[in-house]
Length: 382
Image (cartoon, rainbow, N blue to C red; front, side, top):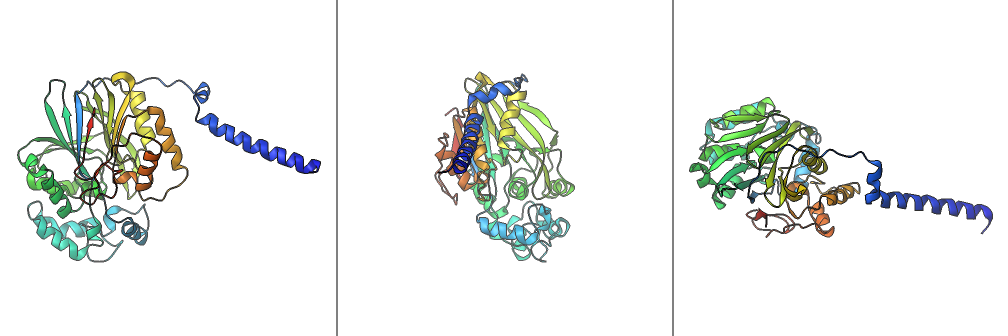
């Protein structure tokens, strides 16, 4: 080897070694020496005793290929969701040529009690009707005195599918008997919101918490779905709803021309913070950091997480997402429940990284045991 080759090799080796060291340093405790100290949050919203989540439906849609074909055909992820011609807002003009106004006009006279008839009309006018599923879960909060309060998070999408899921888990009877204190709508996306009439079929007077950033069609649909109860529009920031339980509204732009999402923070006695999300479009790191910077919770411990983590939900994995998987480790979370919005690859990455993922049963069309599947339950503490 001549001198030039030796120096070239040495320089290359030093460069690669430096990059490797930089990577090792970035994930080591030593990096904190160069970071500003973050002030710990002190907002106190009380405590609860336990949290139980029943996954009614985590299957937002059934086939990613069909879903992405529609997205591509209509013009991409930034297109207004009401124009895709997805159910129930179809007009028979084909993918990307739908409209809220034409779609709601076709079914409004059926809402909320003649849902089978409404969905029959939808099948004639919309695209990919059978691919629509939905996300919804039941949250049961046990107070320190033992009283249990139930909340329904999100409505799902497909009228037929969600009505079946509600009946399977007894949600229909809980709604009809006023056993559910309120309905929490995390955001305006079709797979989380468009089955709203199924709730109204059983209890049109239920109190609804919605983000204050809903667009006019979303607010109009709430009324035309048959809702007659109180509507609480949640602004940006923390919004306690009972001791130990608070909504947090994030102002963030989201795909399909949706803005803003709210999630749930629960301060569980003796164990710490439990966080529940619909999709977590605000980003899981921001979600965790916001809690740390703004609120006080037991033992300063991020104990549990349930919901969509929105890391590669379309299974289009990019190596940069590995940083998110690694970055979440600093919180030392002790129970994790994933759903569809997490993505199949992401859920497997979490398992491979050693996270305490609570496995599901893969029943009722859930695709993997790495998800807390349809009909499965997670409790905090275990």
